[in-house]
Image 1 (tube, one colour):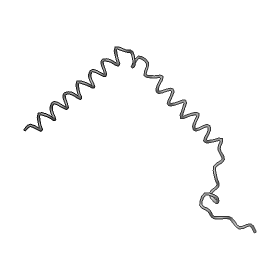
Image 2 (image 1 turned 180 degrees about the vertical axis):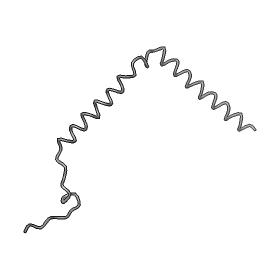
Image 3 (image 1 turned 60 degrees about the vertical axis):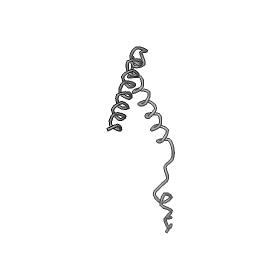
Image 4 (image 1 turned 180 degrees about the horizontal axis):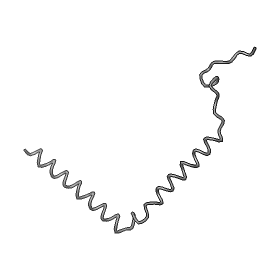
Length: 71
């Protein structure tokens, strides 16, 4: 029974901490413009893809180690 009360107290403490952190973040305007993060991730991914396309990809022959025989 003692362990149950410890678990209940721990869950209430974690829930209260999360609620406090949320209220603190809202009051500090940390969540004012959450769209910026989305666009930062999008443009970073788009730039990475563009750089990947510029790189030369190995052909299937060099990728699996086999060599074609010239006739």
